[in-house]
Length: 390
Ligand SMILES: Nc1ncnc2c1ncn2[C@@H]1O[C@H](COP(=O)(O)OP(=O)(O)OP(=O)(O)O)[C@@H](O)[C@H]1O
Ligand SMILES: [Mg+2]
Image 1 (tube, rainbow, N blue to C red):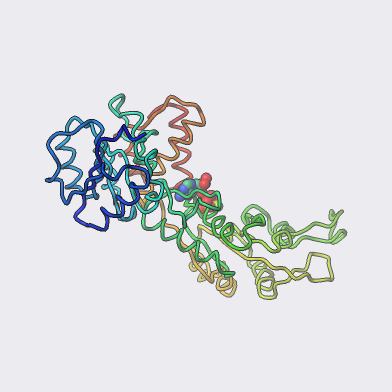
Image 2 (image 1 turned 135 degrees about the horizontal axis):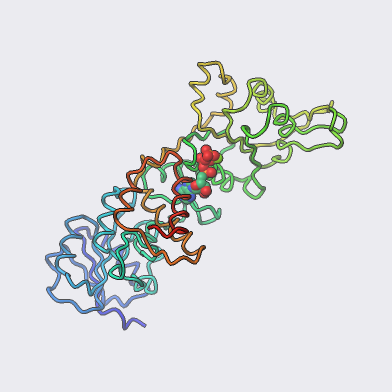
């Protein structure tokens, strides 16, 4: 089985890093094939074609190895302790140098023989794509640690920036509590996705999260949506209607676009949150409910408070734990992996002949303002794949 590997060099000055990679690999690869080196200068001048090099990432290391192996008849892997240490320039640099794989905390456990030899199926020389959908390097960057999003929630939140990783980490912590959460961020930054992650990871996760878009209903309707009503409570109330608060009992109620809620409804909600009970319109009885509230908005609520458009007391009720998501343009490493992820998603889905995007297109996408954030990027990638104008 191992006949495809003739030798693996692990290059790092740090013995602990060498030992970590070696011990992981040694589970499925004959240890005799693994050689540890302190620096690239210790590499031999000639290689067999079935040589694998795993070097601790530094631009100097990568450039030097690329130079030492101009024919690129070997497989190049880099190791980084933490992918969030990579800037977008680092990622672009790795892409440019055609690195086959990147090993990091999030995927090192999966490093076995099968995965190890699965290098680029599709070499870039066939076309001029800079980001291509078969890139194993970018696939590696999409892989998460066990304790982040996708493992047990089915939610995939892609990103390698420090910011998005810290948001995910915070969300996982918050999930263990019952506190009200307010998620803020521009349109399309992933507020609902984070709300779902918090819900799914919480003890309420086995029940479906109930969402209400507060901006989508006129005031009276929103009230009856939230609290429900009794038959005959008003003209047109032909049957009882269960409110969303009631539907969300033992689960989470996601109040989206909370900045659009009227002041008078805020007063009513404040009471419900304080008392933990609802009174359907037209009902004389109150009902105890056990609901966790997550709200989201792209508005600046503090500014709205100073303009008397939002109630301060309500704000402090819903904003026990704030989570802010930065705009996409301020987390460029995420743009790169999201381009890859959406490219792959849409070209596979559309069965498209589009394999990648050129470096020019990449530059434009990276430096664009993304007012619509991830949603806008998603739409543009879909359009590019459909129109085949990459
Ligand atoms: N990090 C991410 N990885 C993968 N998909 C993402 C990510 N962030 C956002 N998305 C996707 O982008 C789209 C917008 O996300 P979402 O609806 O959560 O944003 P939002 O902040 O609630 O937007 P709005 O303010 O317009 O309601 C969704 O399709 C979501 O799945
Ligand atoms: Mg939303």
